[in-house]
Length: 186
Image (cartoon, rainbow, N blue to C red; front, top):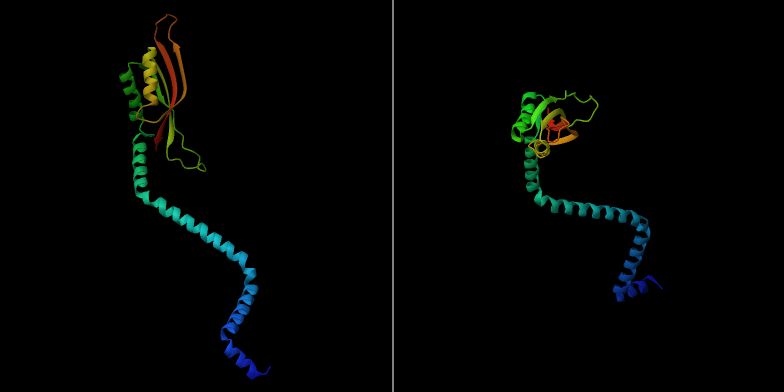
């Protein structure tokens, strides 16, 4: 077959020749780029995960301002219930108010000296402040005082509680010795 016959054949079958040439070019491209397929799949998977994360973030961010406002309000409420570590008189006044509200008599009340945490300890926002107290009264008065402490205006944790009679007689007053911690700030 001569060049003229070959050109004549191509002119008569332009579409078929173009399809064969395109098929050969595609086959060569697939062969040369087939080693890049696994890496491209990893990139695609990473991009798909990133897209899912972005879509979830966009969906979750629609309520972000309301959630932030709720957190700020909750932090304000919590901060309002904290005692101040250095304000001994105000801290003890809380217990004297409980004494007058419940009718139980405080025999001994003291704030445990606060020691600052070591320098390498993690920084705490709120610090427990210890108190020791002894109260006398009827069983109902003492339990009322304990309930008011646990459910009162300050966050309270009872470390230990001992209730015992003050005399051997039936119906005598009881004594309650408490060790509690109130949550406070510096």
